[in-house]
Length: 325
Ligand code: ADP
Ligand code: MG
Image (cartoon, rainbow, N blue to C red; front, side, top):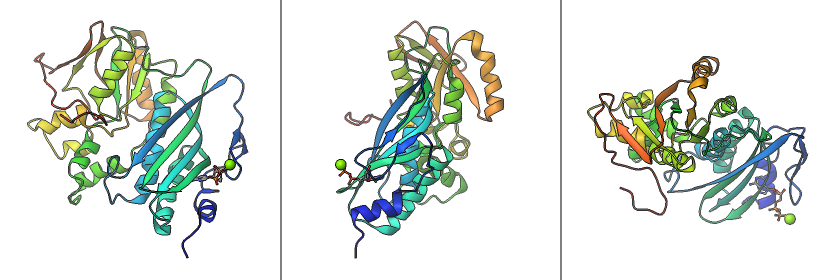
């Protein structure tokens, strides 16, 4: 007999994630009740993953569970917030228990690692779609935003870009080499930069997470800050798995890191006097932080090679309701 809605919630989602002492009421009532300590503010984000749009059909359900939470945690990371509570709205074509078990395992693992508790949700039947809402906390007035970048600030990127885009471009062929598998892992299991985001509070002037591609997301940051940017396209850090697949002679060498998307790294800006602290962060957090350019008083992004020559991007990043170039 197929499992009913309430048994499904009890079996796969109640008790999946850590209990926290700031939860007065979790799963099981009409709504959850949580307490926010004095002096702290809530930071809230929601993201939906739709089958065939945000993940290729046939993606491992464990990866879907991980990614649905990871993309939301990445938004909290970009705001410098510490994760606390999540809601999960799940629309399923059928109650396939093997699918649910794997999905819950992927979601639960990342939730435990990032100390976020699942406190409620909604379960409905329909085409597969997963919506997660996350709540995080920051000390009052300390949230990082997109709007604080000033001309002269340095622009930094965490980690390396382009590997997820490489995996997406070949998602219907088997990942038949170590490099392809590593790219696929970046697409399926993004790692939100939570510790970095929190460390950047009071240090970065602005921040954004890279979900739609560096150029698109840095463009958002610049518009919010009423500024422009100069980028050295050769300084943009490529993910090691990407550098095993393509070289500087390949158009993908530039396109995937600049416009591919699904990286979930942080792009942030720092004023000159605070830059030395960034180098210290690289050591304490063990994450590569690479300077790729600077904020200008102009408008838009100027892309240059290290030798000063101009670079014309091919792609501009992912947009849902626009034709892809
Ligand atoms: P209501 O009908 O009052 O909206 P539901 O029957 O939808 O409540 O849900 C019952 C309880 O189970 C609620 O506490 C809700 O937050 C929780 N819940 C429902 N679906 C999920 C899910 N997929 N994950 C976690 N909690 C869920
Ligand atoms: Mg109700």
